[in-house]
Image (cartoon, rainbow, N blue to C red; front, side):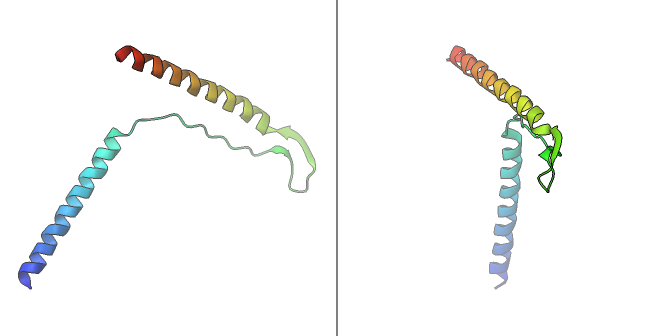
Length: 86
């Protein structure tokens, strides 16, 4: 029984060590990437359906369009640089 308990302890320590090493390696190899976030507090009408004469979604749409264009251009640049490396 004592040998089995010692064996189980060693196996668990090894599992923990390997898990820690795996997560550390995974975190250090993940690339950063751009994220678009927006919060609209006023969407043009209130909860009763009454017009508020202010719609933040219009501005968010403009910013999202800029963000998408940026992503597309960044992807294009990345593809061109990958081709030049080959």
